[in-house]
Image 1 (tube, rainbow, N blue to C red):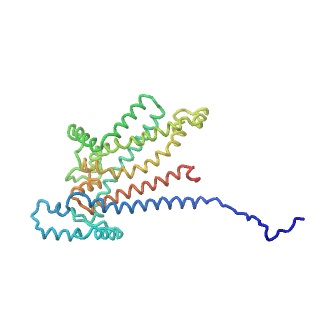
Image 2: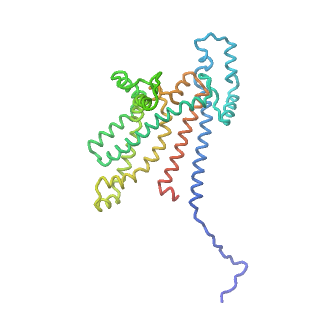
Image 3: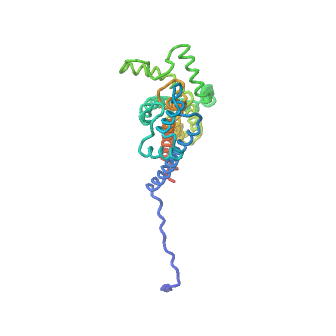
Length: 346
């Protein structure tokens, strides 16, 4: 019979180590990413205030430009816009307005910044959304065909054109488009969103807006689609040497079916995340295109605010653009974890 254990004997206790539950892992991951996004947004809010204060120029003098304004009237304007307060006092007012859902009043337009942004965000989303859809479709379609025909004339031509347009300055390409298709050939309007003074409605108005969109959309697509093409091409080239494609061919599948049903879906992971990452940058990068084509969106509004300088309007557009980029990056992290089984298991 086994001897009885004395009080000095140590019996190791059994410790059950539970594997982390998938739900708790997801919550932890989302919480970390959301916390990082919140920190980035706070930094944007602080930077958005102080960065524009170092811009040259006096907003009050810009408002009084070309008018007979006395020094007393200039002081009244400064007090009206709070520019006579110390910098920290202006910053505190900026924060309190922001937490109340306000972005202040524009010096130039004498309207709430939130109203101006609400009026201009629609045209910007229309322009950038159309450009994004066309860029994604064109880049993915050309990228997978270039990879499948690696080394061919088609591959060399498409990658060469994509890299050329990717390296061209956006404003230069936009001005070139205006010079050729609007100034020389007169195929499209020179700027704006619709014909000035038009009374058209319905389909006729949509056609008019569409004609005004052609040149700015083509400019944005030309400098953006190369990213999708190159990433899709590189991802598909990695997949082409995989064993499962050899198995698919051994089963008698045609090359088009092997590419479409097996290789392309597995090569889409980096491209899908890139789409989310570049969407925010596409909206933020609309400043140049909208300015060149006088498109009445947030980008053109930001350019006009820089000319003043209109501090509340600059701060408002900067916060909106930066928030869109941060949100898109957050969604890219979430989508990447959903699509990549290696991250789901971690």
